Length: 354
Ligand code: 13P
Ligand code: SF4
Image 1: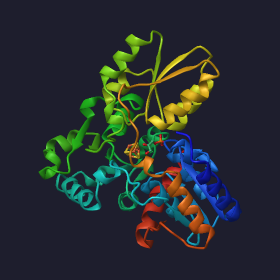
Image 2: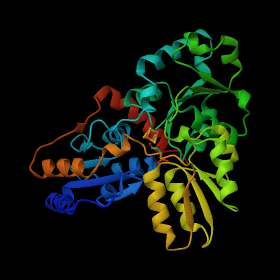
Image 3: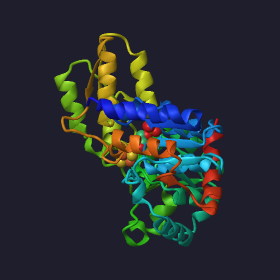
C-alpha cells in the first residue's frame, strides 16, 4: 500500500534527528511502509545477532513482534533501550506456552522418570520466561534457520528433546533433517492431564513436541500445494518450516524467511515459485523479482497476513520515532534481571552453535 507522504517525511525527519542514537530492525514480515525505514532486515536469527552487534545505539526500535523485542533486550546491554512501536504486536504461537504450563510439563516428565534425559529446545518464538526455563534446564534456543544444528547439539547432551512451542518446526526438523520417524515424536497437550500422554509413551519418544502452532502458516494445506502444481506446471513450492508436516513433505524447498529470499535471489530467470509464508513478504518478493522474470505467487488462495506483525504500521513507527526524538522513551520492552540471566544463557548457546 502506498505510504502517506506526510508520515513518510515525519519518520524520515525523526530518524535523522536521532542519528546514530537509534537503530531500526525490521522483520521480513513487516509492511512495506515500515520496512523502508529499517536499517537492517532479517529473519529472527539475523535480527537477534544484529541487535547484539549495535552497542553504540541507545535505542533499538524493533519492527517485529514482542518475543523478538524481548530477545533483543536480553542480548543488548542494560543501558540500551528496546522499543516495540505497538505493544499489542504479540505472537499467538508464543502465547501457546506459558511458564506455568511448562513447569507443569516438567513435573510430568519428572514423574515419568525421564526429566534427567530431556534437553529443552525452544523456538525463538516464545516468551522470555520460556527461554529462561530452557536456559535453567540446560537447553538452547533455536530459530527456523538453525533448528537442525540445535537438535544435533541437544541430542549430544541428552537422549530426548522437549521442543517448545511449535510442534511443526519440531516435527519437520526431526523427520526431515534428523531422519527420525513420526513415531519418535509425541505431542504434549498442555490442556490435558499429563499432557494427554502415558508415562510409557513418553519413555518411548525421542521428541516431545509442545502442542503449539502458527495460525498463519497453519492455513497452508496439502490441497494448496496440489492446487498450485495443477495451476502452474513446473512451479517450485517453497515453504516455511512452521507449515504442517504434510505441506513440508509435499514441498520442494523448506526454509526460514531469509532462506526463502536467498533461494529466490539465486533462482534462474523464467523459474516459477509458489511461496508458503506470510503475505507482506511474498508480495514484496513478487514485485522485486518480476523484473528478473521470476514468477512468484502466494501458495494459498486466501489472504494470509500475520495480524500481529501488521500492527506495526507507519503511524506507530512515526509516533515511536518522534517520541524518542523528543526525549520520551515509549513502549520500552524490558525483561527482568533474573529471567534475563537464564534466558541469555539459552540464547547464547544458540549463538554459539557451529
Ligand atoms: P523466521 O523469519 O526466522 O523464518 O521466522 C518466521 C516467523 O514466524 C517469525 O515470527
Ligand atoms: Fe507468530 Fe506466526 Fe505471526 Fe510468526 S507468523 S509472529 S509465528 S503468529
